[in-house]
Amino acid sequence: MNNTRDQWSSRLGFILAAAGSAIGLGAVWKLPYVTGTSGGGAFFLIFLFFTLVLGTSLLLAEFAVGRKTQKPPVEAYKELAPGTAWHWLGILGIISSCLILSFYAVVGGWIITYFVRSLSGSLTDPASGNHEDLFGSIISNPWEVGISHLAFIIVTIIVVQGGIQKGIERASSIMMPALFLIFLILVIRSLTLDGAMEGVTFFLQPDFSAVSGDTILFALGQAFFSLSLGVSIMVTYSSYLSKKDNLVRSASSIVGLSILIALLSGLAIFPGVFAFGLEPNEGPSLIFTVLPAVFSEMAFGAVFLSLFLLLLLFATLTSAFSLLEIVVSSVAGNSPGRRKAAAWIAGISIFILGIPSNLSFGLLSEWLLFDKIFFDQIDYLVSNILLPLGALLISIFVPLKMNRAELQDELLRGSSLGTSFFNTWFFIIRFVTPVAIIFAFLDVLGIW
Ligand code: TRP
Image 1 (cartoon, rainbow, N blue to C red):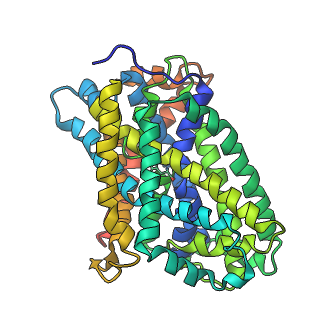
Image 2 (cartoon, rainbow, N blue to C red; image 1 turned 45 degrees about the horizontal axis):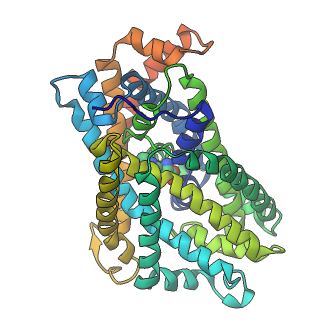
Image 3 (tube, protein in one colour; image 1 turned 180 degrees about the vertical axis):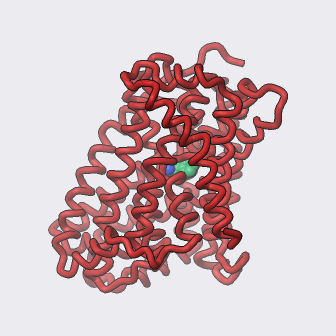
């Protein structure tokens, strides 16, 4: 289809882009609120376990498919399993990515709105009153959040239509470390608030009596979500990798960075929740009500809050790029003209698909589908059904349709790890991952 495929300029460029895809709202916005609604420490521990064992293994599996074939997902599955229905796995990934981006961009819009408001200092002003009421009034105003939702999508489209740009790689290398730094400052402030320890205990001390089947499925979905797994995005990104790169080392860096950010965000949020007498199980609004309160306790709070929101916006955008990139590269390959049209058509359609999610906190808040507002229903469908399903199919596909010796060669290339590492990985991907996912599904259905 094309013989001049883009490549990452360096291994670091790839790690930054893949970590940029992984690190985003999953760790900073979603993990705290899902931990809050799922009982705290036990959830976090199960999430960590799934991330380390199943997440890392699946990440390697997606890398192996992408780098082996050097093709976008649908083509990659076609090449590895010609004449079968397996290319539907690529299509499933594209559909799931569109659904994720539809609600992801809504939250991206909230961040833009908060950023704009924080510039005036009004969010951290003690006179601004109750942060929960403020959040409620902001997100239920369809125009303000509608415009920032659209703005978020447009920025995503503009960057993605230009291809894998040097700009993203370079900007990530400054903004990601800056995000870590400001997170550290925030964590220190949070941990020194009066009553902070209660939050740390909630976040890190497991209480397994709070664990149900749903908790396990949520933790599994969250682990896949925060590593961008199950939708073949990592297949897409690794298809631009050079044959020389060491996949295991890249995967470990990506998993390590995501876990670090997840820990930091829990340590930033939960002490604040308890210190200010808020409820940890408040749902998607959690960080938007807690963070302004924590920042308002700091010297130069307004400046730090604006800076934090700007960096979070950036982390959110780099994840959104990957979600649109998979759609665009699948339909347009590398042809610049077609990329442009594909990016706009897909981006605007995803914006429209996201409108009911956006309105479900305001105009459509009474409109329930199976007991959940539209936004929550789409998130549940994607995170707890489509992502684990995609992951299950990938973990069946890879050992079944790829040659074991070739897999070993792909994964161990350039690394000093030996056959025993490969054999362990192969065992996890072949048996442990599918069995764990199937049990999590059965458990929720009440069958097991
Ligand atoms: N991982 C990103 C986050 O945590 C979101 C994301 C980007 C994603 N691409 C994905 C989630 C693919 C699932 C699948 O914010």
